[in-house]
Structure formats: structure tokens, C-alpha cells
Image 1 (cartoon, rainbow, N blue to C red):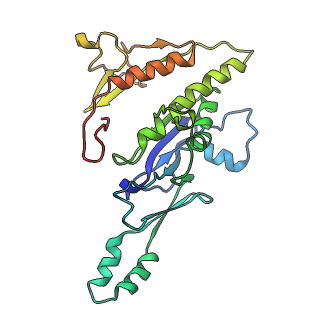
Image 2 (tube, rainbow, N blue to C red):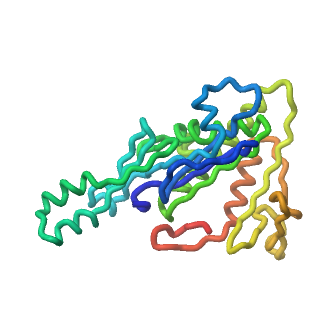
Length: 271
């Protein structure tokens, strides 16, 4: 199922309220805009969603090698549910002597349903995902909340596309480039405040924290950094960003320093 679709993105904004994850499945995508602060005028439904981690699921289009099988995932975007079927259930019914037709008919009724805060089908655009998942987190961060967007899913399920993709066209851009662009658009419109933007990037691999923007990495610097209580990383490289191009360039350089491990599903799987 994971190879056919759902990737996981999770975004949270911390507040004084505890995170209460909803029902989820193995590949999911979560977001929380961290509301609950004073001065908001959201509805009770929005307030409930803002007080915890939100979880979303997104499926990608089938690849040619996968399209020979019947779809095993159904997305209902209106209510945020994902239904998953397993062909093994139908095969188990054939073995005792049921007809193939009866087994397939029963197979249709054995799908397991999972509820999310939102579900995105294979045709959902990057812009639609950003508006539902990324933009609320950015708005909460501008109000003083800490924000996190996390992607989780099997290799090849679409995490990089949803989170990091730059693309040749603007409509292909993932969450991170859109967050950067939207941040600077907001700054340009805010005539009452001054902003100081810095960016840093780390990779955590095998319990080791490495600085992806350390300019002297070839000399062996920036590897095996320590993490203090509260999550601060002494010695981490921070780059001042006065324009969106500067932050996106820092992002590009950080990605070029990632450690990659090739798998059969994805020859550029980042670890």
C-alpha cells in the first residue's frame, strides 16, 4: 500500500496545550497550526484542530509497474478518510473453496478505513497541500509558536516531492519553497515590524547530528554536534537571509550535503 500511495507529512506548532494525535495509519501526514493563543477569532472546530498535532494522508499517482493491479487505496477528501484493501483477503477466501467472484465481492467489503484531519488524493496539487498543511503553521510561527512539518512514509511514497521539491515550474514546488516565499511576502507587507531571518540545516543519521551548512565540511568540521536540553545545537552554522533566494540557496546547499543510501525503490533515498 505504501508504495502505491500515502506519504506522510506532519506539521505541528507547539502551544501550552498538549498534542493529541488522531487516528492514523502507517503512512500519514500531520499538521497543526498551533492556535489557541489569544486574539484569534476562529471557530470552535478550528480551535479544536489547533490545539493538537494534525495528521494528513496524501497518495501519489500509480507508477506503470503498479497500474497493472486494481487500486488498493481509496481517498475520500470530503471527510478525510482513507480505505485500504488487501488482495490477500480475497485469496484467503478462495483457498477454502469459495469462487473467485464471491471472494472478490467479499474483498470489496473488507476494506479498513482510517480517519485523518485531511486526506489528499493523487490529483491534489502542491498548492492545495500547502494551503491546508503549510500555511497554518507559518501563520502560527509568525504569532510566536514553534512550528514543525514532518514527512513520514515508505521510500518512494512521495515525501520529498511533498516537502522539498523545487521543480521547474512554480506549481511543482513543495511545502518548504512555498513556506519560504510566503514568509518573505508577509514580511514585505508588514509595515509595523522588522524581521531578522536566519537559516540552519542539520541531518540526523544513526544518532549523529551533522551541520549541512558548515563551510569547512571537507576539513572534517560540522560532524557529530551535540544537542543540549531544549534542542539547541552549539556550533551550528546559521546563515542570514535577507531575500527568499538566499534562503532557498542555503536549502539547496544543505541538500547537496545530505547522506544518501540507494534502495531498490528509490536510487536517491535520503537518510
